Image (cartoon, rainbow over all chains, first blue to last red; front, side, top):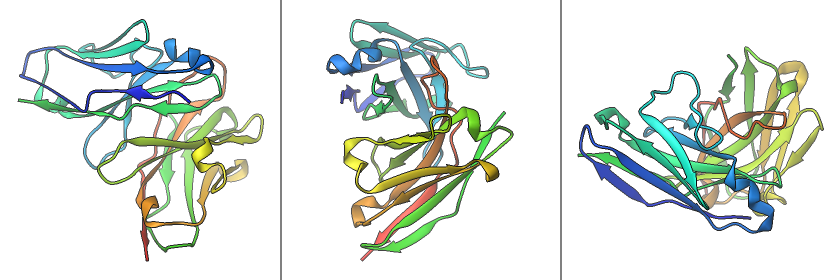
Length: 112
Length: 121
């Protein structure tokens, strides 16, 4: 079982860009981490919602300000043109070769 | 688009079991794997397992292997999660979430609204 590590918190001012990292420490069985990363946004008291799937793809209805990428064993979520409404918790997840889901610990985004 | 509607909040005693339901509308369980994810107060998301409707089998992580049962009733488009031997550490919000049961679909969408389970001694 892999572990996905995220920073506990990030912050930025309106209009700025921020990046949240998600680093995998997987074993051979978690090679799928490198492709099957998704990101979720969660507001307090609400259910998570899908932001990014398969590293860099946006579902319909998700603003282009949200983008995903991957370099080595680290996936990243970038939010451009930060807005107050982006203040939320963000989670990365990996679907592993064992058909399991593994989540990162979550990152609290504060818009200053 | 499919929506997932979960059963209401539960208050349980330590040592008992809880059953949470997740009903699909606007879609079918036959093509969706229903997964369960929990979130303890102030904590992150934790995957508890999922059921593949095509194979009819459930998959659990080691932590929950002995205490969780996930099953589905296709006739009512409802999936269930039973958690046994409850302790205060099981107090959490429990979510169901769907994954299209086919190769290449590796994300969870949509999610249910959540069911609060509170365990008291």
